[in-house]
Amino acid sequence: MYDQFLTRQLQETKKARVRLYVLDGHNFASKDRFSDSDPYLVIKCGKNEFNERKNYQNNTKNPKFYKCYDFSMDFPSGSPVEIIAYDYNHLFGDDLIGTTLIDLDDR
Image (cartoon, rainbow, N blue to C red; front, side):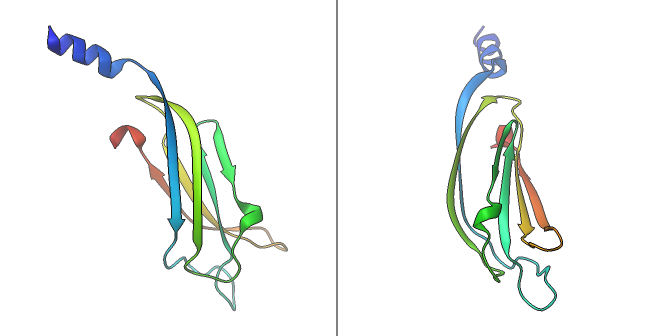
C-alpha cells in the first residue's frame, strides 16, 4: 500500500521554482582571430529564456558572470536547462562557443 502511495506521489506533477546560479567560465574557446572571445550566455528552460547578449564580456577566456536566474517549471518531466555560450560580434554575427544541458529531473 505504501509503495502505491509513493509511486502516485512521484508521478504527480508539481510546480517548482528553479534558481540557477552561474558564477564563472573557464578556458572558453577563442572565436576571434586576434583576441579572446567576447562571451555571453543564453539560458533556456521550457518557455523561459534569458539572453545576456547586452552583457557580453570583452576579450576574456575566463568570464565572471555572477548571475542568478529564477523560473518556474513542472516536476517531474520538466524541460532541461540549456546553457549556451556565444561570442559577441557586432559586425558578422555571433559565434557559438558551446552548450550544455542540465536535466533537473535527474538531480
